Length: 240
Image: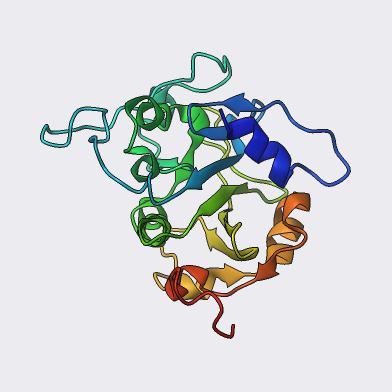
């Protein structure tokens, strides 16, 4: 398992705080916040060998028809049932996307634990957030190795679903390229009408750290590189 090694190597827990309890899934790590009933952050690795789709979203072979099915994580008692989202108007939004784990059945099914999900507006989940996930997948398919850290951002008085699940004000995604030590970061508001242009959501790593309180100590030597995914694996040395 490389997961906990990834989390320790990039050490992005709160600055000055203790390392959180990490739940190791087959190919990603998650830090779950019981008081909020959502993950604090997730981390996974994308490579060219993993940027393939062998299974549908439910784990059936690609030639079969798949379906979505979230459930509580059996190792995290405080993770909610999927029914806790029913009638809320919010999607059960993946943090580690299902698309990134379609190379392995167990890994794929583990993305459907609610410990890997947050309430997202349909406009965000099916719009720019999904588009950014797809860009990561396509970049990995061209040969870019990526380490992706993402999660929710909360304000001082965040709202909750009737079931008690906290509703994030926004989401962050930190996309690191270890081979070149460059990082591409985004913050997207969890609104009904998010800007569909992904480039408008680009921010610096320092901005993400300020908004989340996370240290990202393992990325201290990385250089901000706007729109890294647009450059592709063959043009990383071009001027920023």
